[in-house]
Length: 245
Length: 271
Image (cartoon, rainbow over all chains, first blue to last red):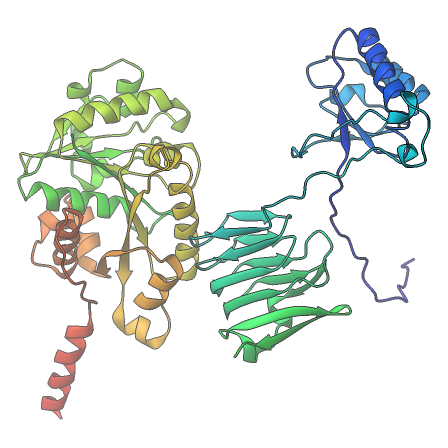
């Protein structure tokens, strides 16, 4: 029997990046846990409600040891959302999933909460200052054509290409995509969830354009716009294309 | 030190081997020492086009594996004193090429020859990446049709990322050689026009080789077209391309345009 879909809306799948705290234990684990306890004593509540990724690269833990470690962390109210660098065999059902492809971010400062040292003050009870320094790199400029088979991925902001994007190439940006040349490949703007992102190109011959997870294939584009300078943006769930004057 | 040129394309059958032989023979006729190296291990053809298939004793793989010395494997052309061939092995495959071995051979050839022209196999795998790895200059052979143009674009991307020059942060010099060009078919829209190809690939044009039966005839008699029939249209185009490779600034003429004018006069007379 075939199921009939009554709802024609498509499911939107998006990427989104979060900043997680990464804990990299070292051996012997007992010593490391003791130091963690010491840190927790000085900065009370540091791990409360904070997603933690456990980096076990080079530790060579098997499944039982890893399970023990996660349990010991659980006792200390550290909730592990993912494990990095573990052997595939060490991750079993009921354990946090394996993560990979993590990119470094500025170190998280652990400030000692004054509460334990001085008389409790209302201000000192506030959570630790953890706001990471703002990423200053907000745009990427490519001064050469993007060749077939190449993929430019920049989720932190806008991508500007001074040149063309070839058929079979793709540009993926967290912000807007600007192409000072022909767009013959794929362009994806707002790839990590930004409905305000736009795509601009000098000559539209794209295979696919996408903004915030909504995509449009070449054949869905208005033929009158092909070969024209065009900007594309998102209006609700529809991609709007308009000739640039 | 000689210059290392890789003749590459990504796509097969566009004229890499023909162009390697023709450019090699054209440069050798300027009295410069040239070696053409076949990197298509397992599917060698350059020896046939050069007419040296019966003189192959040792090959590139033998030299890399230390079974033969480089001078033993080099074959001197019977017509041109300064033209040499380093054949590929037909019985092995490309896994026999090692990065260190290739580097050693290329470095040695560079010391003896003015031009080392590497005939790359099709594809983007080991054979092709090793052929381009040590190049100073790339000649990207492209036919005026979309699949060849896209494959060339991919190869240009690899030339800019996978070669020693690129890894050192230098710019690889790249030239477009448009082969099998037919002006009447391009005019009819059956083929891409020169400007379309140049616009997509955006690298300088080395030459346009017209589609011609002379090319096939030359391969079949085992001679580079620039040796078999130096007065033919493709040979003239290759000679000009070779002069541009050597640094001369010559304007590129689009083949067929002149003939178009002549035939126009001709038809007018006939009418």
